[in-house]
Image 1 (spheres, rainbow, N blue to C red):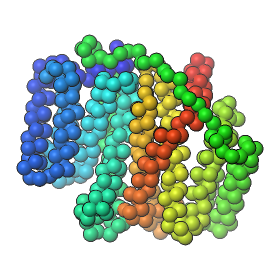
Image 2: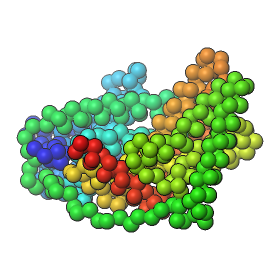
Image 3: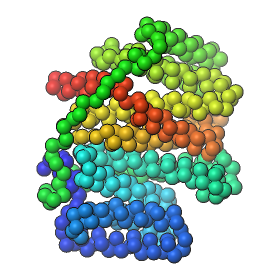
Image 4: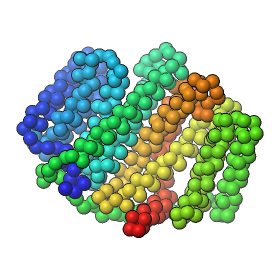
Length: 428
């Protein structure tokens, strides 16, 4: 069976699966009625979304037997059943995330079935994990925004900013664990899926024809010669080197680690070009170097002097992460024959990638900050409270939208070169 068929084969046609799946649908409908009657509008919206995703195949194919596996619906209903039978316990925070991850997988598979998007199991699982993290981020942003703008208390409930931030980080960690666990389970399920899908459900094996993308160079848009661009990047590298030496001289571990890491990142384009023959235009190298240089300046003291410097660096760094995400997705699009990512999917998944990476970064910052507090040393990465965390994630999303909307044409040549390099390596 082709890899693409394994996604369609998720919807098995058996009497037992149909009966059990519709029983869980009844549980969702009962939960919806309860939420409406008790005025829980947030839960009502989530339940409606869950029911719509679950029933979309049956409605589209006008066949009540075309439903997801009952095991998946059981995971979706797990938070509802957990509240009834086990209202508390160590896994209480992870259970809702397992449900979200399952809904995310079904949504991704349905995009594969009903649109021109073409995926393979491993990529659908990776995207599911990213979507799960991104949904967790959006949820906290919406709760915080409602509290700030409307005076609600979904998140800002009177506790200190650090206490709320700690609770959010624990929730993010639970989501990350649940996403990884669910991803591994889903992939193993796809590997063991027997048989072939119904011909009505199966997506086309051959992805749509690739439409040539417009390419452009960042260097051409800058009012600087390529030689001057290289000199500016070199000056930034030299200043980062001085910051590193100053951190070494004064034995400031946070400054030493940050400057050393940032300096190493600035040499990545040159390493790719020298060792792997992947040309990186000067404008792209300057883009990367300036992003890490601004962050390094913040660690020297600008984060404390200028309150908006952190916002600026997060916005700029998010554009670099978005560029990396878009390039990775397009390399997969070009290199894997069974995968086709249309422009709308490239746009959406680039944003999802950046938002998910923002959650991963906040978790890393949380661990670094808590470890430093426990050891009694200065933190290499520090968090300043829930307002700072949410603001960072908001500007991560803004940077992702900017690149996904206007910056992708400058990454076409890089992704084409990387895809060709991978093909040559595989052939070799």
